[in-house]
Length: 277
Image 1 (cartoon, rainbow, N blue to C red):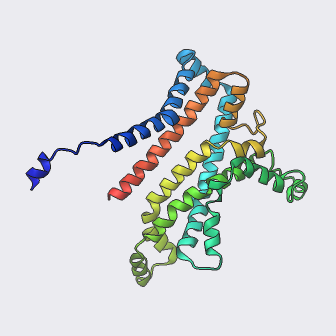
Image 2: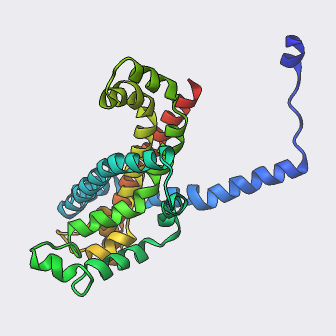
Image 3: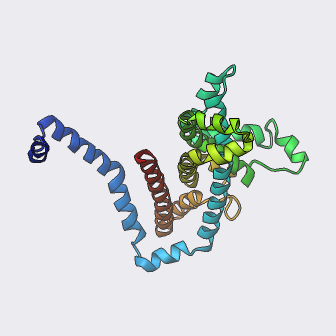
């Protein structure tokens, strides 16, 4: 039987299968490979010196570090509140649970530009909470707090949707056994529950960070893109293109793209590792 399996030749692809494979390859080539090649070519238009000069630009570095700070802060917040939300949805039954569960996916359907505009309606100068916050000396619109809120909104589903199935798949018998032995709820969480959640938590944080790094529309509307104050890396790319600083724009886009690809690759590796165990 084993010899038959080893000597069995792969089936010849039919015309339909060849057509589908070709369609997929063309689809990926047009949407992914061609833009990446064009981006790399534009980045090295002035050689390596042009790339290094663009990436060492003071304005780009300021924008990149602001992006990184906002993204890391958002990732930490989502790791905590997103996990709590996923825990409630997975373990608790309450009225309007299905409505709350459906609301988690709203950021997938709403344009980030609309998100930024909605935040302006709430926290802007003429918004519902704008005058109250202004009297307390707190500025949200056209400031970093508004950009953090916008990024939190667009990244909300990633952590929650990743953690819900992980929490539902936990073996509760270990938790019950620990409770029977007298362990406190805090001890049960850190010694029994958290190790089982760790891979899913890291995976969700990685996807959240990757999405936060590339956010553009929402932070543009709520932050205003003020150079040196509320300009993130993606807003810097947009301004550089408008000012015809193409090498700077391409170099910044390539760096952000590489960061995102590396994060997604890490996330996929973690998922493959967790499923192969």
